[in-house]
Amino acid sequence: MILDFESSLKKLEEIIKQLEDGNLSLENALILYKEGSELSESCQKQIENAKLIVEEISAEGN
Amino acid sequence: MNSILTVSQINSYIAFKFKDDYRLRGIFVQGEISNFVNHKKTGHFYFTLKDNSSSIKAIMFSSSACNLSFIPENGMNVIVYASIQAFERDGVYQLYVTDIQPSGVGALYLAFEQLKEKLSKENIFSEENKLPIPRFPKNIGIITSKSGAALQDILNILSRRYPLVNVTVIPSLVQGNDAPESISNAIIKAQKTDCDLLIVGRGGGSFEDLSAYNTEVVARAIYNSKIPIISAVGHETDTTIADYVADLRAPTPSAAAELAVPDITNLSQLIKDNNIRLKNVVLKLIDNKEAYLKKLKISPNEFNNKIAYNQMKLNQYKEKLNQKMNQIILSKKNNLEKSKVKLELISPLNVLERGFALVYDEDKLVKRITQVNKGNIVKIQISDGYVLAEIKEIKAGKGD
Image (cartoon, rainbow over all chains, first blue to last red; front, side, top):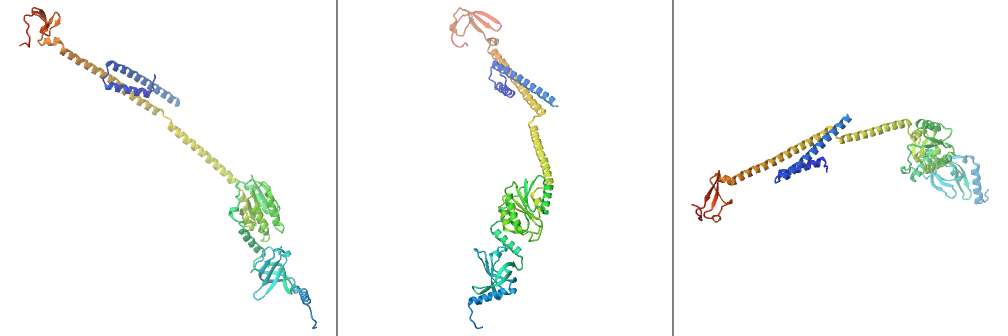
């Protein structure tokens, strides 16, 4: 499932909170960390893509 | 002499005397009218003419009375044209009147005032009965003399000011005895045309010349017209009954033409002005919409700012994620270290280091005296090795 940027960011925030709360097993913490990293990477990609589109459009406009 | 006469004889004689006297024929007599009777059935007028000290009976037969432009009233000062004759039957003499002129004011003027008052009482002049004049008439009917200057004036002005309008000329007499009927008929005839405005009038003239426009028949025709009428009689100073009845009074025929139609020059200017206004309004509207649209559009800069903000947030989260994970790893590691220390603390080897020893009997740790018997060989573990020993004595209780 591909989440939109805002939802991804929200999920990432939740993961960080869960990690903060502690009382997690290392295995569970690692699973959460892995998920968080993937979300973060997907968000980064979306941002890069948005930047690209904006640049293209503003280049067309000028 | 001394012969006896009958009443008839004497009255007949007197009547003869009156008839014989030319001075009693075709005379003008001035006096005030009183006891006026308009005999409805016959149309004859009966009245008494009097002055300060005397009076005389008068009769005006309908054949003459119908030619009067006004109706005599009690108290009216008049000059009558009459003959004096005796009325044999009653033995009276009286004035046989054939014309009456008001003394002081003219007969026509009096007639005018009387008609004005009469029609005014019928509300024929009232504003609420006036028809609106169309702003852009299509077909104007002109009721005037075909040969008069008034018609030319009107046509000139109409064609100059507003060439778009159609003109229908409905000729009428404008003065003379037949003029009132002619004007009235022309107005009635106009009702069947497609005229949407009528101009009724004539050029200037004496009060008598204009008198056709001061008649009841013309007034009623104007009043009954379903087409709005502009009156245009004589000069500015002349006001006729027709002017009072008309839906709009123009001081002169030329003025009527100007009142009837708009000036095309002004009109085309008005159209131009409106065109400019229209264009400006639309342009302004477009400007407003454009400005609004611009407001709605996000500029690349704004969007870049948004991206930068999200990037920053993402970076923060990334950092936090790693930080938290590292913290967790660190705390797990700490826990491990603590456990190690604890483990070390409870390790038996550690205890042996402090001088304690472990006793095994056949590899079983000896915790109770009951586990061993005298003579058993046990293994004693100490910190750096073990020794073998034989049980010599077994004794219960805490060692001393």
